[in-house]
Image (cartoon, one colour):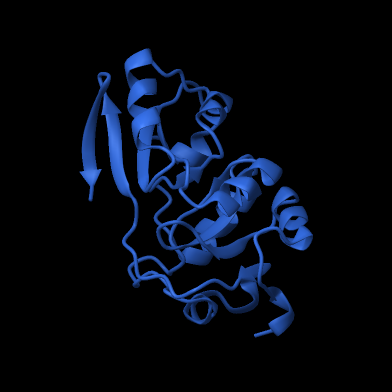
Length: 190
């Protein structure tokens, strides 16, 4: 493993430029280590699915900087849902919202829903402002435990990831997942 792929800061210009150009990185989110790429780049998202050996019918969570980012994904939010989102974000709650059209099928994988989260971690929100929304599934091969450290993530992905952002050991659980059905929140995980 090349040590020059390990960086220490989410504000590193190399990371930002790489993510904006279709790169893939591993970093600690506010919940667990994730493998991230631009949510606008279908090929970068496909690359993550190949790296993780992820089920192609399983959608991923998209990290956004603010609730306003949701509108970029053909999602309309009713006022009652907007109030709910303000109550849980920023936070460790991902919310699956219905999307219209096929433009983002590579994100919702045919389900018609995209799960979003505004992370608690301010530095991560600042990164997203610079890069745009990021798809962020857990840093592991499907069926294996999520990486708790950069070293564990390297064991999964080796040189197949462009950057690793070295953070502290992460022992938290994945985010709670809530799906909005008929305007009401339904807990799907956690």
